[in-house]
Structure formats: C-alpha cells, structure tokens
Image (cartoon, rainbow, N blue to C red; front, side, top):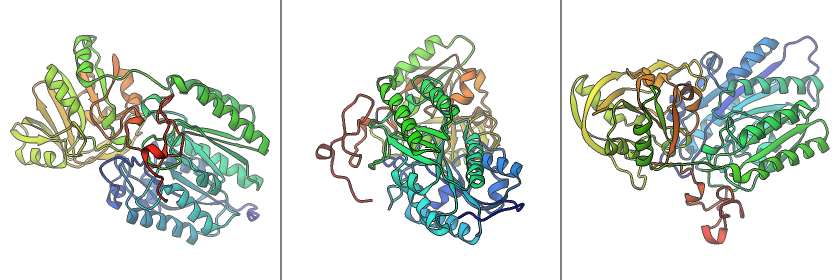
Length: 515
C-alpha cells in the first residue's frame, strides 16, 4: 500500500529513456548516441535532468513543471534520447536501464514514479525495450508504487508495457507540439492515483494494419477526427485515452497501431477501447495521400515557385527522425537535373565533408563526394566541386514549436553551394524541423524559392506557416512511405502491411524469431 503522507511532500522518482527504432535502418544506437542527444539535450544525470531539459518540448520538462507547482520532491535519476536509428546496442540499453533502476531503488521510499519513454525501442537483444525497462522498475519498487509513463504518438505499445505500468499516456499531435503537455497530463494522472490510493481499470486494443507515418498527421484527416472524438470521450468521464498510430518500421510482433483506455470501472475501459478502435478501423482507407517522384516534385516547385513564399519538398524517406542517416542524394540530384535557383536542402549529415570544408575555409572550392554512404539502393555519394559559403561549430538555439527553446549541437557544420543550391552539412543527425537549422549557417528560409527538408511531418510545425505549398517526395531512404516495401520477417500473422494492403504471412516472409 502507499504510505500515509499527511502533510509531507510527495517524493517522486523520475527518469527517461527515449529511442525510436527502425530495425531496417543502417546504423545502430550506441551509448555515445544517447550522450550526444540527436537534437535533444545530451544524457543528463541527477539535477541536470531538470535543468538541462527545462523549457524544451519533451515530456520530462512538462512533468517537472507541474510537479514543482504541486510542491513535490523530485528524485531525478537519468534522462536521455538518441536520434532514431537502427537497433539500440545491448551495452547502451543495459547501462542506461541499469542506472535508472538503480537510481529508483536507492531513492526509496517513493510515492510514485514517472518515466519519459518513446514506446518503439528495439534493442540488439530485446524486441520490447520499454516493456523490459518497466518490468525491471516494477520488480525493483514493488506493486504498491504507481508508475506512469508518457509515450510518443508513434509508440508500438506491447501487452507487457500495459501490464507493468499503471498508466501510459501518448502524445496527441503530429508534429509533436504537445510533448511537454503530455508530461503535464502524466503528472495529473499520477497525482490522482496517489491521492485516491487506487488504480484505474485498463483496456488495450491493437489495430491490424500499419499506417505510413506521413499519413499520421493529426491536423489532417483521418487523424484529426479520431483525436477530436478521443477528446470528447475523455471529457465524458473516461480517465484517459490514447491512440498510438505506431511506428511502422520495427520488425517484431507488436509493431502496429494501438488504443489504450483507462477508467474507474473495467466495463467503461473496455467499452471505450472498443469504440475508439472501431473509429480507427472504419477509417482505414483514409490513411492515404499523394507521393511524388523527386524530379516531378522539383519540376512542379520550379514552375509554381513565384509566390514569394518557398515551396517545401519533404525528403520523407530519408528522415533521420524515422531512423534514416539523413545523407541520401536523391533530392539533391533532382534539384541539379531540373536546374533551380534559390534552393536550400538540409540536414545533410556527412562529418567528413564538414571537416573538409572547415579545413578548406570560407570562400574556397573543394572537390568531395558528398553523402550517399548508408548503403541505400539507388543511392551513391555525389562527387562535385562545392563552394564553401559558411562554417559553424553547430551550436545554436532552436525556437520553433517542435524542439522548443533548446540548445542544439550538430558538431562542425558547413553551408556548401552548387550553383543555385545551398546544402546544410552537419556532423550529427537531427531532423530538419526548425527554421533555426537553416538560419544558423546563414540561410534565411523565407528567402528561398525551394526548401528541401529531410523530414516527414515534424517540419510542418515551424515551416508550414511560411510555405506556399508542401510536396511529399519519395527519394531513396531507410523509411519507405509504403511499409509493404520493407523486408518484414517477424510481424504478427495477418497484420496488413499498409492500409487495405497485403497481409503479413509467416510462410511467405519467414519465421518470427525469439525475443
């Protein structure tokens, strides 16, 4: 049982471990990747967990803000996030998970625990990274301490995660402008559990088809209507509802969308879960839209780019926010083939090119082979004579609604130019989702006719207000906008590989391997 608190402030253990795993991506996530942060604050321990994330749009920041207003005593352990990639390395998972569990164990007695998680982590040795972490935390603190976790909208929620946590609360926006707000909602849920001494009933449903991430945008249908109905249902008395469209590039049995509901009575939770899952299933055919080949998109942009506002081309399949390395050359080649002026593309992650530019200096021309080193089919480095227009140490403040007001560190960076095309080259991965990621290197986004962003949806939060038009492109990358093109082997039998698409069959695609 939870102890009687009286007038004593509540003691709450907090931590975070975030990674979105694309099991088909070429690069793994090492411990160093979590130290660097991938566009977010680097790995934080103890009080730095609070100070380094304050004001940043992440779940832990919102939770801390609400907890401090309530007068809670926070016991911080460790928080970290790495840029999405391939599998999390075993040593990285064991080191980070071990520190979080040990920290919570030493912090006893605690009145509650909050964890800032993603929900789509796959490691070299575990299919369900978050489920294992929650299991270890539960085993360490016992059944009497309430555990609440916030999740990404792209979480691939598993039965084990639902079982081990008392409540899981997912984002409701994509672009994720409500990450900190979700942390605040988690704090409210934890406070209610502690005050009541009880736990909500829970229900869980998995949706039997994969949804391409580009059609998960919450400001467009069908997600807009689904989340509006979700909010209405919650306002009518259900404690908490979440719809996680999932991350359709993790090759394990629980990869798929899901619905989570919590209520006072089990019957209420089950009824809400059935209703919300039915809403999603009824809209399966609406998770679709228009995709363009690179040259087609660039031709359209060149013809229409006369409004004084940039046309934005999303290099959606080379999105580092979905596990790609952000270095494929397909969109750059298309810009060159069509012939454009006042165009900019970023981020192009190539540490060797950035170093070469710094050695060569501003105003010089150097011949290098840029990008194209991820082994993606139909992609290769682009060798050319690049003009070095600007250099930077890669440290600057973001200001848009996705990243929030945080410090980004991309390592040595350069602005290279090929004719009328400017290329933002960085040493570290981060999704192009903030206008500051052009401005720090001397490019004003509003002055460009064409902006190519290596992002699928998150860029919209900061770039949509300045765009005359947005086109989604299918240049080579690790995250196809059609999940059925991926070489699946381990999905659950019968899951449709895209909305209204073919179903996964073990006999056709291979056997499910052990976890």
